[in-house]
Image 1 (cartoon, rainbow, N blue to C red):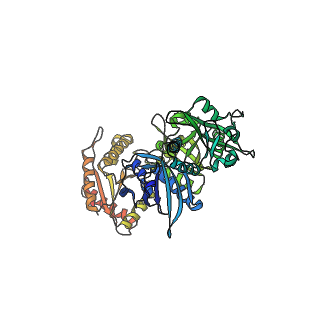
Image 2: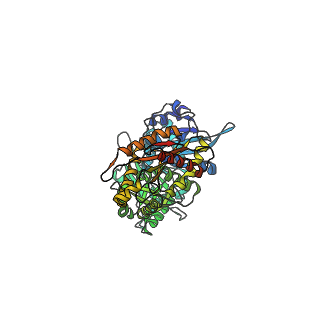
Image 3: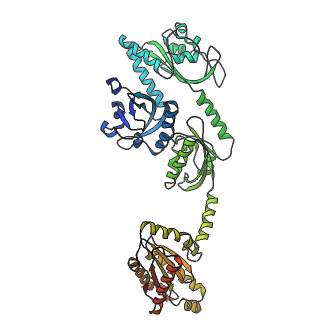
Length: 539
């Protein structure tokens, strides 16, 4: 890059149409800590936070495709220490020989206000150059005309000396006819809250030797009577001796943002459900008071925080994917995740989100914890044995086909074992069914502790248990099952004493149906009983 770009106060990056970094200036390298070699030929999104990657894909490329440029995209760039660096990115698609590239300007910031400060810093430097070196006056004026804000400069009497094109558009005055007029004659505004006419800002600064005044809640009225909401600053220009030599006023049209804020306020007040607005970086922009009663947070606890940071870690990826899809397709999305309360617990929250105009996503939510817990309880009842808490035969039927197909596709062995308590009828006849139930529960606990996490233990019926052992041949299964047998033999019940178990096992043959496979394992179990019980036999 040219030297004047290389050391400019803003970062500059050139990207390929696919988002690959092709050129980069020293300013950007300085505030990210990278060397050029670290970034060149790397995808820009590689260095973005997870949430920013969503925004980059959903907003950057589509806007470039539609408009040929992108304005004010807020992202978090990860520096060399993996810390987040909030940035504002603006880009234009341009021709470079026979190909296209994307020229990007990047301003380091924390919030939008930081962009204002950065812009103000650049303007102050140019003002100083304007005062000290005549040869830079042209650069000063050129820059003021290129800034995407209305700019009006006055002398120390409040008379206009310079006015850029945007200021002409906003006020309805041509620069030449406005030159020499008082600022208040050209800049006519009323307070949006009181509807009273605003005083001449510049004259107030000159009279009070003020350094800077914020322009807020002002409706600018042009010569044609057109109204627009504006925001900006008015700053005194000081000489080296500290004397006021003039005033620079910069302002931008925020009508769209103002109306959007009004729309947001209305949105928050029309419903008793949890309502919030998040920006394109998934930061909370506004929330209503229902968050307090549902999750325990005060409004200030969430304002400006990352929406995703409160999502249970197991639900984050799915939540991000749904939000990304909603933004990309501009559609209503619904999803449920576990959301952290102020006390550290989690509640199931059902969300509905709709991207709005501009950079916001509107969300309504409700607490569905009770409903979710009931569903989970019903599911547990449907697939769990009530006595032992193990999976039941119904669950085995639903998952076994999957395990058999998976074993065939991966060419992995799959082994089945059937366990039957020895002389269990004698236990029921001697001590009664309640004691028999206690023994079954004790057996289930003992087997669970002895098998591997990958093994599936099911109460098949009565005193019979089934173990499905994925990726395990019959020889490896025998080792595990012998451990199970020994553990049961060593475990003593307070009433019945020690109990033994007989086990039959069979490795599934290629394409074998469950019925045939089970028969072979059951045949091995029968052999274990015939050979004296308390043993493991493979078919």
